[in-house]
Amino acid sequence: MEKKDYLTCLKSTGAQSEKCRMFSKKYLECRMERNLMAKQDMSELGFSNADVVATPPEKDKLESPASDSKEEK
Image (cartoon, rainbow, N blue to C red; front, side, top):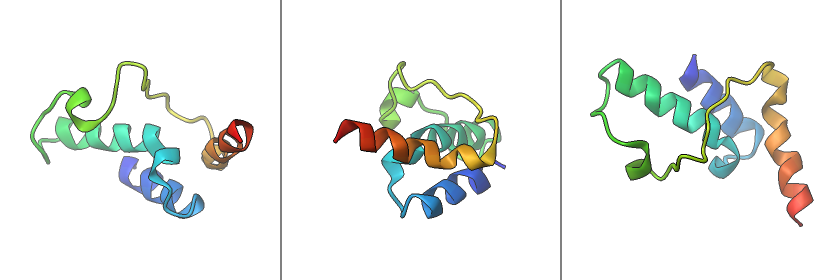
């Protein structure tokens, strides 16, 4: 499920991975839990303690990171 969510996010944001960080982190954690990749500290993979993974309540919330970038401009 995490992989599908991450790929859906990438497609909806035009492959702007920074907007899909929460999905990326969740996907990598899932892979480590299932021994599909070596376990590493998330900080070694570019995530900080501030990068909290929250499960999004709805799939249509994928576009919410795009609204954040509009506020930054």
